[in-house]
Image 1 (cartoon, rainbow, N blue to C red):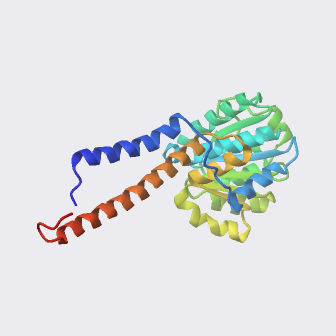
Image 2 (cartoon, rainbow, N blue to C red; image 1 turned 180 degrees about the horizontal axis):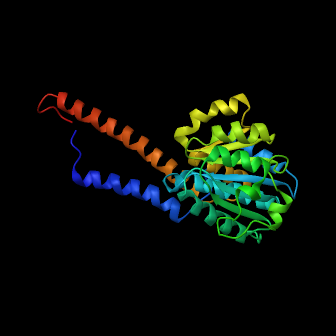
Image 3 (cartoon, helix red, strand yellow; image 1 turned 45 degrees about the vertical axis):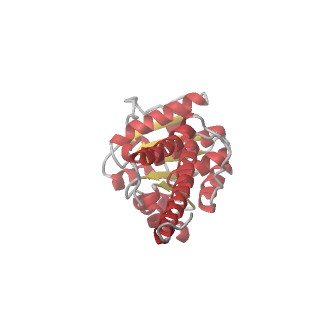
Length: 279
């Protein structure tokens, strides 16, 4: 069955509307029901006490921003809503430092938090294993300045949390590459603090074994997990809108497939009818 250009254009227009309309006009009709591994990250942060400190590792770059940046915002908003102190770092790619700086500043301003007192983003430093080991012992020695170039000496948040070991209550690594493994091996395991992770959807299967073994206590995979976390914290954002677009497009694709098969069968039946037979 031949698809005419006009028919093809209609399909493209419907797909475009399905993608863009939920982003322009967000709606809450389709809830994103959280999975147990996403709830585990949420519950760990939810059960912390006001004044506790967590670390969020921004271990992704702009290529993974659509999936992991909404996850970062959701975790940050949850932490600040609980009055937690937040340390941030980037050990994957220097390009990710800018995303971390933007997210920490944006969410910090939303909640009226003070940079250097309530939170600090330390920025990027190479040689991840050495940095993680060093931060377990002394954060200020590993990062003498933060991502904005300000000295960490005398910073209230560094003074109250001078090291990861015995200082933080939870670590969340938002990873686009192979950073979960070294964080587990050289950070959370010897440091004695629990750890959760977020990753791109394509990496979820690789890291699920860490969740099954208990090396991490929670795992968020892709845009869907980010939308689930937004649902849990009741602060819907880009991930929820993105999932609405994705769901609408999936429904349209199923309809197109069913309609295409129906029209194909109809055309074949028409070809088998004897010429001149009444329709």
